[in-house]
Image (cartoon, rainbow, N blue to C red; front, side, top):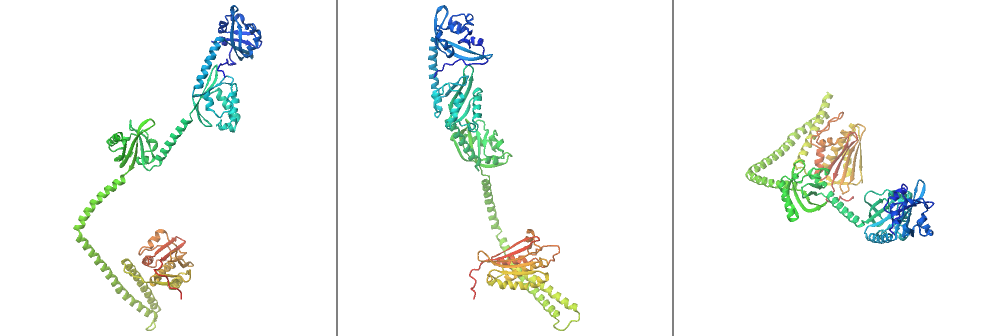
Length: 639
């Protein structure tokens, strides 16, 4: 392979321009007539170029039989001035001028040709030693030369020895046919568009180097278009560099991911000017500084005492690392807080930096201060308790006296109110039933009935108050036994049947299974269910429905539901109804009772270790559920 470069055809060149070149050139037309001899050629031949113009070019040949060399090029003997001869090498290039084909023949003396050959060999040897791959195309887009590095950089490219003189597009097509050589997706999607793209780049190369993906890695490519020569491409294998870059990028991305997701605040600052380089989201939140605004912030501005940072940096320079330094910092709004700082000196972006991790210990500091304050207060309290022991004892005695007074009041109320009420009930029933003779005025009988009902209602209220007071005082005692759910349901339904009929509502009962038993105090269980059924009757409009349902619970206990399709309650109304004397005011609904029903039910079920659940929606009704826990022993077997 020769590096000797033929003069390329230039469609815009004239013979006169060729004559002015440093090389010895003659211009010959298609008929073989000499059109021009440049000064260099005239000097080489020692002839008058103007005198030769218009003569046959073969007149320059010592042997006219070598005339074909004016077409193909080669070595021959030329006639020179004064009858001398000169061995020359002819190199032929072709151009067109005004539509006329011309040949530009370069004349090189044998000595110069030999010297050029030696230089060519030296140049080739030097280029073959280059680590960069080099390939050269002439102005006709034909391969002139490639060095050994080009072979090495494309080991999978077949037929290198056949490429000399091949057209650029033929080489590209060969590359496209070889598996994996061309990595551009366009080569697969639209081969002709890819070829057009490559030709365009051949004639208008990239400005500056660019990176290109190849089958086994990456190349750094520099392309040049050199006048008089053609297209030159230099390639360097940067696969290892790219691998190292990718590794560095992966490490940086890993570090950034770890930093960005770390709950610990992290800050990177330059050692030279104390400017912030990077903060992670935790630090952004801690200092109240948006991530985008953090770079170039002055790190000492975040120290309550900037001298603390100076001392921290001195320790880092001296020891290379700092662990768990307690320093008071401040955020962007100048709010101080205590932090635990650990750091190390490192290099980032070619600059010395400090990597600091920050843990907010304000809560711990507050706890420490709180403990100190608590210890102080405990000491004061101990002193106060020591000096006020007698007052505390007196208060205890007063509380015991108050409890005895309450108990005495309840006993008095039980006797003083119940006894006369029983007398009122007894005498009013005698008058109502006319036991000692007929009463002529029916109104008196009606009044006696009213007196009886009012007295009975008052006695019921007193009993509820006494029961609720006993529960609150912890004096209420219950005796649990195994009760038949079916019998309890029938009994309670019978007790409220009159109220249900009066209000025009129906009560359905369901016990599943029919032999279900619950472990409860008989009187308390009946009192709870009667209260719930009475409430349902009061707050269910005429024509409504009430359901009484007994069912086993998953843990062996029993759940009792009292449900209605009445007026319902809101969540706030449920809470009020569970308070003592709490009543729900509703338009069109008479306010009967004292508001003790649900609180009493709740107190009694809690004495059983159970609970009351109330679920209700306005206009949809209410469901009250009693949960009775399982008994300590099993219910008696059926006889």
